[in-house]
Image 1: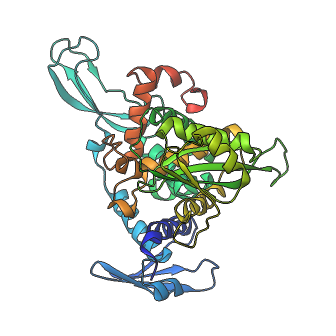
Image 2: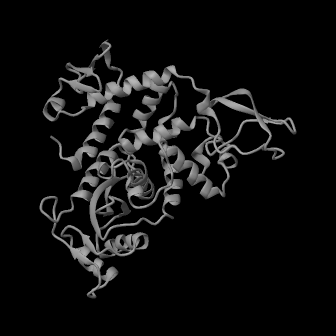
Length: 410
């Protein structure tokens, strides 16, 4: 059986692989009401999935060995959900949020007045009983030709491990919506930057033990050949109890100055820990004492730890494994500045969107005392709050209406 601490990470990887299965031309085949077949990854044979009440079985080795929902079972579950969604035409989903009064005269005497068909779908229309003005309410996604659900689904799939091309294929297959993979990439990059700036204002309540580690990632260096690029260092600091990722940054080296930048940023966000746990990299020792001091009451540094043993760095090592799975799908390899924006987007996904099994379904941010009231649609609410915070409670309309895309937002 899989270790409880690893359950969420393993499950997320299987879910990402399930989406990859659904992005192929070969979809699950339904044999009867409770029996399905999914083509294997190498395309040589089919695995059979059977539903018995709420439980599922599959004859693939992964399910038989671990007795968990495998990628084939997840693929069938997602496929069934998408089929159901395509049958539903719910105008209520298009209702604007935060409706208050007439946008012309300010009257609160407003009634519904039919619907209007727009390029983003069917929208509720309102009429003012005082001045007779009819209107639909604009929101933070105004000026974008796609429904907010499409934008948020794209971001969620991307940070779950799909490439922008596979996300585009997924939207076409299951939402009948054609979106360029370049547009999806711009959504991810631009909205990540807005959200990153917004969430950085909140201070987490952390435990006294932090973990720090570094790993290599590949970025674009200006070359034009496929696969051309260079490696840089990604540094991360994570709180032990809440699993809150305190800071991450990219550097070309991993010297003392780079380690000091990491500790300085972590200190600005979370104050000082009681204990910092790192690997044996020499830069950590000098950088840590320069930033946190050497007095009796200064934080303590523990080095030379691995993933095994009583004192270990396994929490952040597991995050790096999860991170590398996602950085593989980044579009073409990015320059350092763009890579840092997307990596901070992954930090936001980890802290504010992805629930953690160790916290009974809460996100690390909620475990750290940051509850933004995001509800079930976390990406959508994060975007709405972030745009309002950045534009002084205004929408994106004025910024993007001229070119009708997010490309000109920044």
